[in-house]
Length: 597
Image 1 (cartoon, one colour):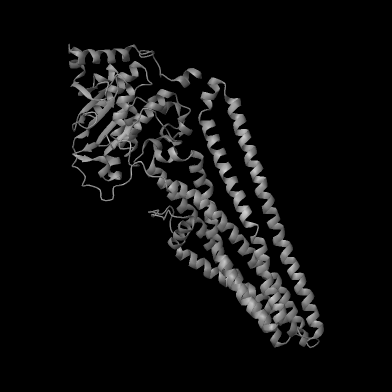
Image 2 (cartoon, rainbow, N blue to C red):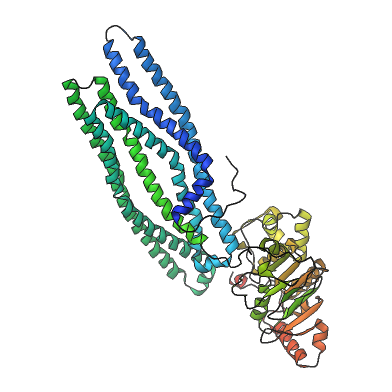
């Protein structure tokens, strides 16, 4: 089996569900061919059993009273060979079926994950989070079921053709009853597939809405408790759960009828074959062994019919799931890769935001200050190239080349933006800090020390090997912010942008962080969005934004404070408000969650 995940998920066609499934089938054609061969051998060997048994019965009747003859022994030997072929090919068929399922399911999972990674926030702007999660947790697996069934389905078709051909050569009437009766049974069963598909689609959509509602409710549970809204949102989830249950019952109703007919209709066909065959034996048109063969094939051919019905259902489900997967894959990326990326500017190039006039010269630690923190944060966020359409009118260049024209993967390694709202992931602390997968234990410890997050190590059993819960909910707001800062420092990029990295910590902690970050990033391009004088006092340069979002003044923190013009007055006002902000000089992490607790 090829190792999973695949190194390249590929570029699937997005025109239709059928094209997507066909594309995936071609990508794993090697294992699908093996599954088809193994499934065909297994079903053909199984289809030989009624013929061999009928021959053995006739041979035994011919030699009754004289003991088993050589012909009977040959029939028995042939049955042993067929049994051995069934066992060996059955094991191989199951192995390849599982590999088919894994390859298809995890390829679709990888496609969705890769798209979500590249598209960024554009995915959640267009689709509910529950839809994206369901595409991975449900749809990818259901689409894989069709591939797992493909080998046995092909074997069943071949076995049916061979068996029907033999029956027609032996007795035209009985052969027609069996050969045509089985497709009629399949056609009747197929009539239920379309309504089943419609009900499955609506059930799937309701499950996606339930997933999204549950995710939102759990994520905002602390806020809901604060405003007393738990019961209201729990009732909404309960109503949606009942809707999922009702639609699930409707699906189960059609499915139960289909399952019942799968047993009833083949059973009626077998009864008809037995009745016609017994009359043929009485007339002398068939031997007892041939009757056994016809009965055996009437029972056996219901197996390929069930496989065909299952394949039809799985194909239907796969198309429904493939359309859901396509819904994710069709989302336009916020930052698409340039068709022909421009040559990368040399290291040490200026990073310039032309809309604001912000210029980051290489090797300098710069602070960006504005009376409106949202304006300065928006400028800093543009430097990370997160949304090409939104930023088309506000180009940012690196070494004179627009960020949108550069290779996106390379740019992500050169320019890192750590936004104001820290988002942590569940898992081992050391692994979650090391986003690039290259840090040593000494590197991790140094970054934690620079972010003044030593207390986080002490609070987690196992320290760096301790487990962080989902979104780091066991940590205070200030601890989460400092862990996120340590993670950003560990990326060690050419240009690092930090948006309000100390907004949730007390003044003493902020002073330590400001000093240590300045030391760690000395000689490397760094932008800090902040109005805190404790941080501003450690940077090489401060750039002040006007109300219209343009850089109006530049200088050191002390120099801007000492200016007697309008820029100096505005700067002192902004810094003064920061110093006078509630809790600015308190001790301990500033965290609403901490106060609620």
